[in-house]
Length: 107
Length: 121
Image (cartoon, rainbow over all chains, first blue to last red; front, side, top):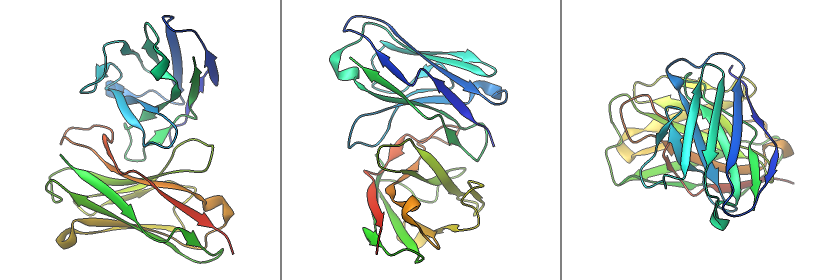
């Protein structure tokens, strides 16, 4: 089972700043099968990034992903108030998908 | 555009079986190399992958839950289901059903709204 560890647990920033969220996998994720989700209270998660760096349909270009192997990053440039949410990384390299524990972004 | 909707009892007694159904509309249920997944989220906590079933019939369950979980599908009704036996308070959570939109290896991008299941006597 692949374990994903996200850091930091909480990130407090101001509008207009840049957010950098990290996700480390317990083993190398081939073909970069890493996704990032945004979840707001009372809502289902929303897919932001897949394939480690491909932005999903309808997602603003402020959101970008990078990384390979075991270390992956979600970057949100120019934070806006509506970016307040919890962000999860997920691996789908294995049929036994798994999620990181989440990073809470406070703005 | 696919739409997924969870349904089932919102309250289950300890030691009993939790049963949920996900109804799929707006697209073909029997699509190539696609999976139908269940994910849960205890109140105030993170997302936990429970398991999935592929259109081939293959199932995959999270190791901590494997002994208590069964996922099945009914193609004729465009539904897939989750059963969790011997539930405890720790199984209280919002349960999401989800799937992907392409045949390529991709993460879930279609999700139901979620169904809260509380385990309590």
